[in-house]
Image: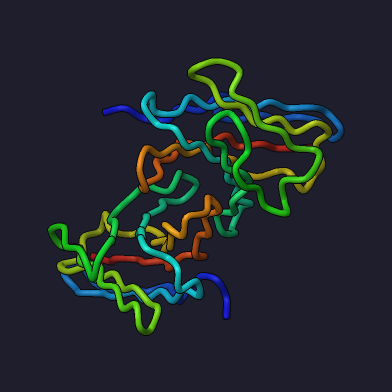
Length: 111
Length: 110
């Protein structure tokens, strides 16, 4: 069964550093998403991506964040200058029709 | 009214019990609805999709009440493995932003 994959599973970085989180969506899916979940809190929408551009973003997704689909398979989330409050699980999701399928997540720890 | 509201629980039920969760949503334009389950520190996994008045899959039944803007999830014959957080997600408004409910925690005990 096809699945969404994410790397790395855990990333530790220092405040102010740049991080890139990687996702490989399901191959025939056209819509891609990033979410974050701070420990103990709800899943929060960050951004959606369709047809090689951002289709919608939340107020969390400020200038420190960017997304890219550098080739036909990868979908990346970059945080330019990490803050302590960026520590969270970051989930990638993709969909073909209406149902979104999630990757296992990257746990980002900012120290 | 919050965009998506769920009773956080926790619901503590014995094995074999029937349990139901409700979720209310504010966007009347929502056309499709999803229930996800999330285990601790894992990704949300799609449990059920609802596109009309309801859906049934084995022990799980979802019902939609558009007039009152709520959806419910019924779990019959609860198993220990049903212990998880259940997330309600209204969708299909034509936009891309997806709002998750905060989830309802279920503990099934032997």
